[in-house]
Length: 370
Image (tube, rainbow, N blue to C red):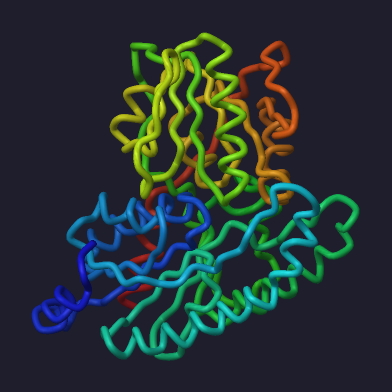
């Protein structure tokens, strides 16, 4: 990993007129990093100097794609998802530590801005990365937080807390079309937010629909997300794939791990680059994956419809999106604790999302130069 201490002084002396943008995705899974990819490309296109602040697999992913961009280590939030029991209670007990991490992150940013002459900050769901010393943007599709079943009366309180944190930033960027004709549904309804809101359209690392004439695999599992639920789903699908006898590919979503062993009919890889994914994803291949929002944006652009969505247990955002995909687009969803039953499977409808690439371009131009 490149050291910013070695690279950054070149930026200061040679490019002192250019905006210096710190891009910092949250480290819960790879989705926050992947949806920053089109943003980074557009920043570079518009002559900005980019610096990363990332951790875990997201940091490795961005370094592989942009090896010349320096990286600053940033602490993660270290939220632990339970393997059993109440997700709501587990998260509630970790809130004091979470807010302590946000406060620490905020102090960290003030030092980074001064030390590395940061002029702009793009924070993907990192609440502490706001400052009066730089122009700071917060990226999220989850403005209205969903509560678990039976506790929906708490949703106004959750929105109030989220709103308070979001409005510490200069702008809110939402990777979607404007509600209600959008992909994320009521999650991204920003009606009551009091800072400028920009809808960027669908942000995907892919640009076109899949057009692979050769079917290689019957089943593909595309995994990501927090532990231990990622591992629990991996083990479940690995066993199912082996027993099926079908030709399968299991992508673990662990770019920082060593290669696992493959079986006779199941190839197992820790990660896969975009080019290789397009080579193996065929319209008749059944894809098993989480309904994480970044994954949904990618699949909407790719036009893949043969999908079984398995939400992370207790993750209310994914559960909401899975239910919405099932009711609005007829996609098949499966609870993680249930056995895979292909007799109930059906192809989903094509997700017709009309997205305007100029929205991202204009948002970044205004952000950098106005």
